[in-house]
Image 1 (tube, rainbow, N blue to C red):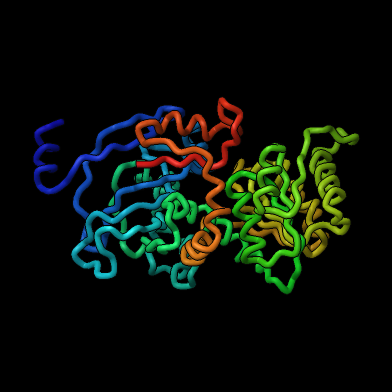
Image 2 (tube, rainbow, N blue to C red; image 1 turned 180 degrees about the horizontal axis):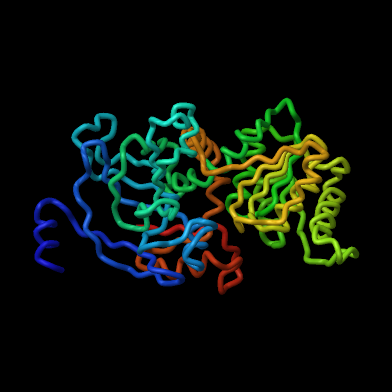
Length: 384
């Protein structure tokens, strides 16, 4: 450590351990310096951070869609922890409070922010994202300073802080439900493509907040589909296979075949009322359009390849609305209420827990459908 670093620490800063990504599969455990919190900030010991699909994209490819790594970055944004220091201008938090971190910081002044759509703020800084440069370090670090405005107190009913960390992906799912404009009066039949963590939470949210009449979830993993149904995330599960269609000359034939199979198995001859696409995989995005009924809605939650072949003609001629979802806006309070009410169910998503020092191993496990013992991998949580 240099003399300057020593002087900085002596002035009130402290050392913390962080996992830092330098490039594809190049994650290093390092020591950093953290300053005391600014007047509007809280300093939080990060107790739990879930590994997200976007984190895995950065880890394996050095990018997530259009957003590429330009300099070393700590990943992690599904986080919760305990307040250890309070900025001088903060009056509504105290040391010891448990908080869920909403890690996107918008400008709060632009027209999108003023309309409540702050997730679309052009000046948004989001932890662990490469959308802007310099990047904003994520939460795979022992402590962070974070604006108190974007910290949410965890209800007393939530005993396990990993549930508070799951609020972040649940907020994404709730954004999808909000964008779909589902209501219980619709008695909608819902299809969720993808039974990963976000797909499972979306299926759960469709029942809990969307009032879906029936939720069908589909995935290529029989183990994930069984988990979804057995644990109450969905009413029905369908396993998709890679069988080839008869019309090999039509590039959309595999998607049409999959969609027809889903509708037949679910008894949804006229198609589903709402389809949530939670994979970002091209064939699944295509399938979502053909599985939707006339006048239905397709909600794109998964982030995949930026440019895809898309069945826009089928969507247009049947007035299928294509709705995009990018993160969330205003959903944390409701997500916290859900985990307080249904923590026993939501908490089943956490299948593995590992220490920050073992972050590389955690990312390797999170990259597999099952661990070396054959156990299902859904949400890997990195703990302090």
